[in-house]
Length: 318
Image (cartoon, rainbow, N blue to C red; front, side, top):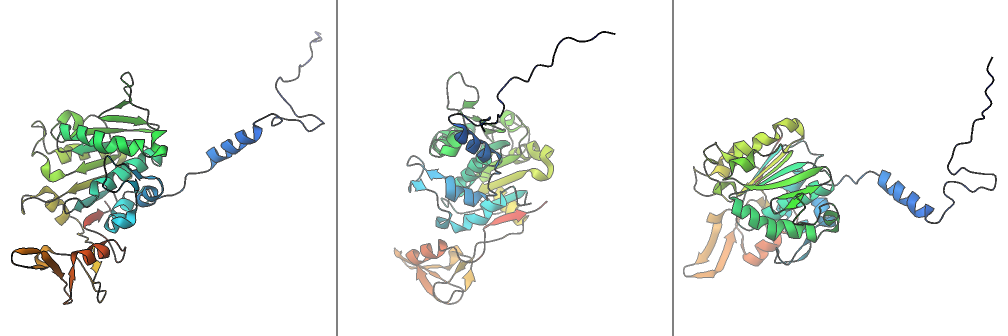
């Protein structure tokens, strides 16, 4: 019989010994262990509005009030944003709104949240490709530049870096594609878990004669089934012809209710309840359904005090 003459050599690498020295007996070991532990800790279960209040910084290039974003300034946006959070089962949200009420910034909060907390492919659609480029320069680039959590996840734009262009932003686990509703190629370029359709009443009736741009865009999300999120936003145009009005009427038609500053009675604001002296618009005041009258500065405070329920929007679970 053959008798082996070799012996089993000990494993290479550091091992602990009787003196107590081991794998962590070197400079910087504590920092490495802390970083390892932080990496294993799960991300906080944030809603989109909580994320925005914690991480979103508004740039002077894109906001009249630069600095930290505060949902309390636009409380009617809170439920809309939170319905876009992964923990909420709602798949499709419609927001019919007045002009300049912060809807696009809320959509940008959603974009930032997705990049940071719930990565996936995202499609953001403006009425035209040119508007998509302008939105990228004026809103998306500042969104990323002013938020450290986003800046470290999206590569800086370079001429040779195809991952970050004017209409495409790559990040770990996903990509943001921006396009116009007038481009059928852009609308069917990639599957998308998240779809942000901004100012849909300005969309053309057909994208390059290939069909309704909203339908084309939403078809990109079908592969994600119940995990998809779609946000449609617009100021309405002509009654009976408005796309956002049609979508709103097909929803559960929630509205934002404002408390009367005198008696607290909740009501949603209607333009035809405004009163003013002829030729003196500075006298404009709102006549409440409970018989009180209050002026613009009071109405503004009421809109931002965070009372009552939400929203001028649809929140439908499919």
